[in-house]
Length: 157
Image (cartoon, rainbow, N blue to C red):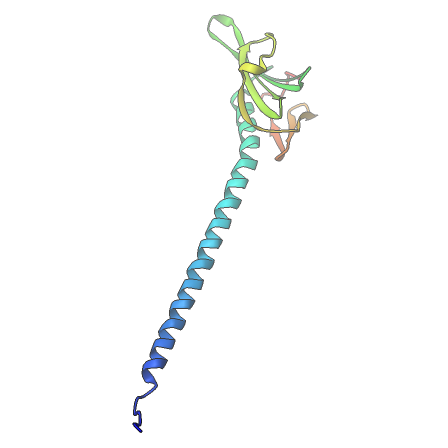
């Protein structure tokens, strides 16, 4: 019979290298899952905050005396942002809910709503505008509420 004088050191080295490789693989896997979850949460956050942010920015961009008002229509509340055009004509950006979406249309002030030609801002089932004080509006959507301070005094409602 032959007797083996081999040392188990080679097997230990391979086992340790395999252990480090498995640990590295698990670490990469956890890192990839964490990154994916972070990106998913960020995308949801942008979608949620985007609607409120768009509305508040639109209001602040049209914050003039009698420039911001709320009207009732067959589609619910309509946020009307009036602008003076060239030649004294008045135009209005109207933001309202139509068909499960928040839409915006642009037309002459006083013109009927045209939801089939309106631009879709985002999906929305809830859209309410509440006047808290003379210069403070609270706009509520599916994404939550945003409070806007009208610097012009909010004389348009």
